[in-house]
Amino acid sequence: MLQPFRNDFNQRQFTPERYAALQSRLEERTRTSIDFRICETPCFFSRELIEQIADTGRVLTHQLIDSPEYLQASDAAIPDRFRVPNDNPRPNFMTADFGLVRGEDGEFHPKLVELQAFPSIFGYQDILCEEYIRVYGLDRELDWRFGGLDGDGYWKLMGRTIVGDHDPENVVLTEVEPETQKTRPDFNVYEDKLGITTVDIAKLKKEGNRLSYERRGKWVPIERIYNRAIVDEIERKKIEPAFDYRDELQVEWAGQPNWYFRISKFSLPYLDHPSVPACVFLDDWFDGEREGIPEDRERLLLKPLYSFAGKGIQFAPTDADLIAIPRAERHDYLLQERMKFEPVIATPHGPTQAEIRVLYVWPEGAPEMSPVTSLVRLGRGLMMGVDHNRNQAWVGGSAALFPH
Figure 1 (spheres, rainbow, N blue to C red):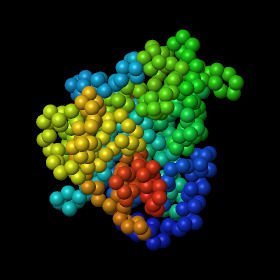
Figure 2 (figure 1 turned 135 degrees about the vertical axis):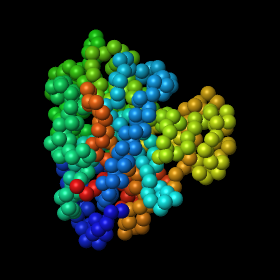
Figure 3 (figure 1 turned 90 degrees about the horizontal axis):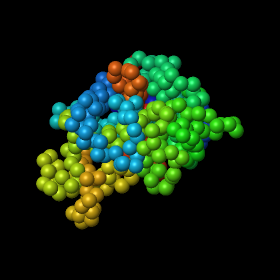
Figure 4 (figure 1 turned 120 degrees about the vertical axis):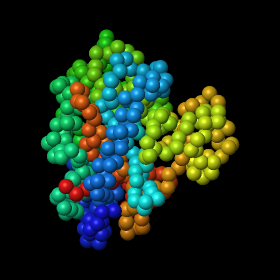
């Protein structure tokens, strides 16, 4: 969007050779192959727009966490078998996804796609931004971190959030079969930057109320868990962790698992803000709560509450689709107004849509959550995730750069 950066990149700075070098550098710095599509281009936005989006995500989060009524309602969203004792009063991590729509004033305005109190790729994304600027020879004054953070400040804040006061040896990143995950480049960055270890959640050991993991032939006690395991995947793959989530364990969580359920798609009907599309639980829609919900089915999305990476989203659902969902399960689905996101990124393959995700951290004891960086997913199809645009060019995982 931002000129002259956009035209300069398309016409002068991009070359296929530099793109190949970008891919090579990222695999070198993350110590692994990258199995999702890296977009050829970063995105150039005004600082004002990016800061507006970041502030909107913070306002929406506070609408939820500052509401006793919402917190009580969201308690029902936590499945009993995955309810972890000793709730953390604040989420350590937040992500807020927005698309851009053109308002009646002709200006671009952010519209919420989703909030999620769960970590994203804080590690990989910082490396990606550095390499976009280095490989393509971009203006060194371009920023991607918020709050004036430099590299040292960024990783100090991430260490405070993830490791806390513990020895990194006693902090693990837990995931389901981490060596098979597309996000493993991100895991490797944390290992290199923070000294923590990535561990398969199914390979932990429990003795009494303590957990440990095996490292170099010995069992190491775990004091803090950076939680990256998605409950949906644990259920789908029938994974049996060595512990029960309901256990009173002597361990801290960086990203207490209950927050994954408390702030998610479940949150959308409770938000009140110009950036939030009309949204209702499916059972409430059947009961007649339809204010603001378009009657034109082409303008609707049907979303399951508990899915990841866009799985299960249905565009333009028919009456038959809605009626087919059993009555007892309808509260686990949303009907949502479908936004027309503008294709704002000019590429050699035509205008392309951008979904902007702002990443926040909230270390223990900090008075406020902080936006620290962002990521962008570019696409020209119905779905914006990197898995849905694999056979196109100038789409995929990207980054937001803005003037210093």
